[in-house]
Length: 251
Length: 251
Image (cartoon, rainbow over all chains, first blue to last red):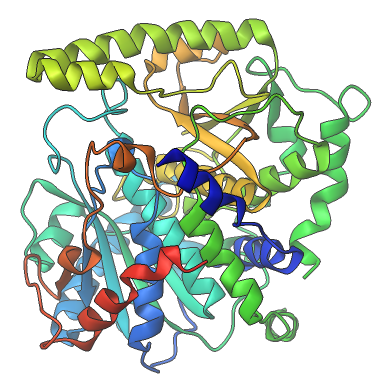
């Protein structure tokens, strides 16, 4: 078995253009809220991005996910109502901190539930393969993390297909479970709006809106111990990281 | 601003080969435990995969991650000891369920901490941008999920570079924090072993070992409501998904 696997894998190499495709996808992926077009997503495209999600890593190979494909306008409306409720509560939280932040918050478009042709809820069934799971014995959240990896795979595959995805996280878990008829034991990890878009933004919308700046990667690097930073004279990796700051804008 | 962004993005299109590069990466990514080679990872490659991680989606653009680059043999040994302790505890849990499962578990190679030239811990600083975060008001775990997206970006970029990554999750959070000198408030979301490999397996090791089978994607799909399955006669997406089962093996 191992010999055959070896032979197969020796043939899997990546051309420069294929590798570039991966980076282009990563750097141009956006959280889409307001640019959805009603054009239907063809089955073959949707199937590919779902297969990409299904091939995410999962702890103990438990594949804890399901994919709830939402096309019904009525169901979308229920989910949207749950969003509106949670979003009002969120705006009030910002008000309490700072009236101006509250106003800016209210001006942000944060979901495209009704405009996008398809919504997909990616879930986690924490009991799928029994109580003891390889790799989940010490860190209990590993199964939720597996479903998040499926989200990211789907998001990237969609971007490479020219399809936008927006993650709606401003929604109470119980309200989302109710809207989708989901048992309490199933965790709805992500509710995604999916569809073709008029355009993708160059930068994340919260960055463009001046809400927060992009952190400098070199300042987020520590070496061997927490808090142990190095500068470009101490460590050639740091100088390379600084040099590569323009990477995402080279395409 | 929006006009300029539009112009920029109209130019970002994906060739067939670039899109194929994304899928090839997704389908050929493996959790690597036993095939690491000691060859150093060049700075330019490491820098690119770190930039890919840094361009993951993050809730409220909080970018809650740091990257602790571990090259020190002494630090690796401490982390490895923490793994051994947690792994013994895990083996006992499987014993309690089923002696045979316990034996199989002990035969699995589950980490490459000491053999891989670089380990990277990706963390989450939950208080990075203050107590109220756009998109984290209803679901408190969204910041942890952002760091998981960074893990998946790094994992895919590494695969496209021919580099293997293994996620070591069999380790107590406190023990890992201690080994890396990390404050209690920082969550070490993932501890990754990173390096070139002798080969990548065709399939996940737990699948090859017969621990669990790959689920059929079509059976994981629900429509509009939890539990509402369709067959290929009811829904053309289902028949497409079944037809595409061979997708991951076409490269």
